[in-house]
Every structure is written in C-alpha cells, then in structure tokens.
Image (cartoon, rainbow, N blue to C red; front, side, top):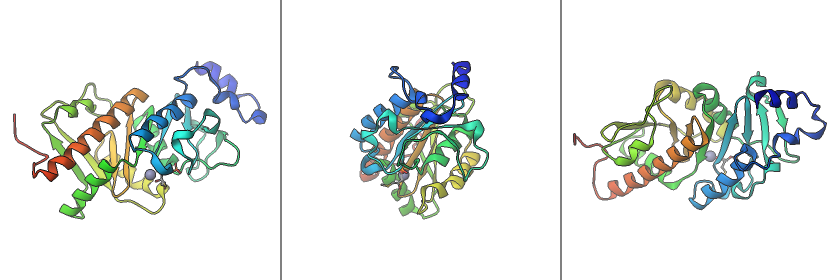
Length: 251
Ligand SMILES: CSC[C@@H](O)[C@@H](O)C(=O)COP(=O)(O)O
Ligand SMILES: [Zn+2]
C-alpha cells in the first residue's frame, strides 16, 4: 500500500490529488472522518463546528476543514498532508486541499499526537463533561492541572501508555493533565507538547474551559479511549454532586 501511495504522490498535482480522498472503502480515512464526526455530533462532542478528528495512515495525515459543520462533512472536504514534508510548522504543505476552505485550527495539535506519540488517530471534543471536569478542578484551585480517579471499571478502557502493552487496571489511578485555554487553538500546541513530555503515558490532554484531545495507536483505540474518558468524566461530575471522592483507597 505504501509503494502504491508513493507512486500516486509522484503524480502531478493538477487534479489536486483527489485520488487521495476517493475510495469505496468505508475504512479509508477520507470516508471515516466524516462518518465518525457524524456519530460524535450525536454525543455533543463536535457540535457548532467545534472539535474534530484527524487520522494518520503511514505518512499521510487526513484533516477536516476549519469552521465547518463537522457532522455534515464529505470526503471531498478533507485535507491531506504528508508528515515527512512538513519542515516549517508555521507553513504547512498540503497534498490535497478542498477549494475555498481553510484547514482545521487543530492541525498542529493533531500533528503533535502523530509525531510525538506515533498516534494513528486524534480526536478533539468539546464534550461538556470534559469542560465541567476542568471547571471543577479550577474551583479547587486555579493551579490544579491534573484529573485523577481510581477504582472505576471503565479505567480499564485506557491504555497503560506510550510503547506499553495492555490497559490500566481497575485499581490503577488514571491521570489526565489539564492545560490552560488560549484564544487561538494553534497556540495550545506548546502546552499540549509540554503536557505530553511531563506525562509520557497519557493518551489525552484536557483543555480548561474548552474540551479534550485524545489519541490512540489506531482509530479504534482513539475512539474507544475517548468514549471511556467521556464516561469517566460524566461519572466524575455525578460523583462530585453526591459528595463522593474521585480517589479511594479500596484494594
Ligand atoms: C466553536 S469554534 C471552535 C474552534 O475555535 C476550535 O476550538 C475547534 O475545536 C474547531 O476548530 P476548527 O478550525 O473548526 O477545526
Ligand atoms: Zn476546540
């Protein structure tokens, strides 16, 4: 597949490399991103144009446009870039660009997950549960930059960490770093990368008053980890309302 792709890339760009987003395979990233975003919209993850999803296949990264209704996207709306061709982070080279649109402002954050963690997919949601968790942590102290919870079965839905086999156990403590929001999405990149360096095993970074970025080695892993985290955040909000602690010493 990689050989076929590189020969395809040698083709002239006269056709805007539309062959990169045309496939009858439902699992092709250009088909999968719109299909996933349509499902995520029903969960409140990508409503009002916020949030998004990006998939990496080998060296190629597939991205949504900026400011569009993410649940209504079509394969023709998808941008494609080659990771190996991105020399200057400020000026990206796209192999394929839909006309009259701009690439997602989340692009540098997705790229951080692909380059620093070798992720195959990164999902950004504006889930209210994720936002509420960051607000609760802020209420405890504006300096609280870590969400922690243990002894919850769904923690087993999260991987042990980068280059580690298996998932967290029931008694393990799940830790998700929180970074501060910025007026422009791309300005989150540096603090997201710092959070990845500080917590090398994390598969997610919460963004205060904004949402969350979650990644995984595959689309399947990124999706199920985002689902598990969203479940855990909703549970955490309900626990807080009932005066229950997120950390317990059951063993
Ligand atoms: C509701 S606007 C949200 C955006 O500012 C941003 O946070 C976001 O998640 C989506 O950015 P986009 O450039 O449309 O992909
Ligand atoms: Zn966002």
